[in-house]
Amino acid sequence: MPYVNIKLTRETQPITAEQKAAIIKGVTDLLVDVIDRGPATTVVVIDEIDTDNYGVGGETITARRSQSK
Image (cartoon, helix red, strand yellow):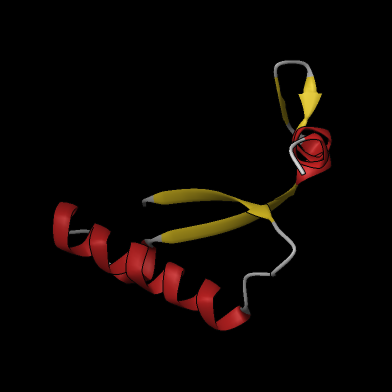
């Protein structure tokens, strides 16, 4: 059973339910085509991560982006 976890940053323009559905379908179809696994057993999870919850170089992404403006 394929299990795919996609992590996307939560930005000012949210990812819509329709876009998430398209991602899930597209990833499922890709796995069916490439590794010949049935779509009924393919799990796709989308996690949205706030920019306060990850960082680079000791700073949150929120802080880094506010400095670049």
